[in-house]
Length: 167
Image (cartoon, rainbow, N blue to C red; front, side, top):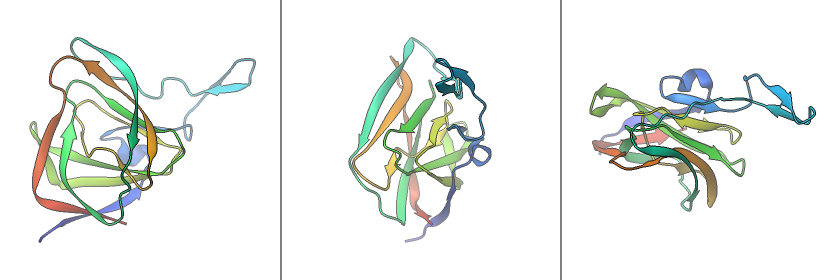
């Protein structure tokens, strides 16, 4: 079986910029609130939604641990809204994203894998090709902020050959 090979790299705001934003205190400014007991890192991400919808906050509990290396066979995107994942237990997780080949599919030769250090969340911009949640430990809880509304909002593409993700 032939694989495309993707090397996992550390998650950084600069490397992730084509796909969305890294949600983290590191590298961002703050101001004090609550009698200077709290640093507020304000509006790190702006949620995107289209159509009749609202922004919702959910918890995703990933119950399957992924072992490295592993293969992916698909990516998905949400054309009507952004989607943010924030680890709730300080756990590391993998982020796999793809650049578009054209308006309807990702380029299987332009897949990137990032490792969050557990203090970083991610916000996938509206329409960004990404793999569903991948965790290295389970169970793992994530706060997820995304579009809740009517209409089809998940496109899935299957690859003709698997893509190997490795350290």
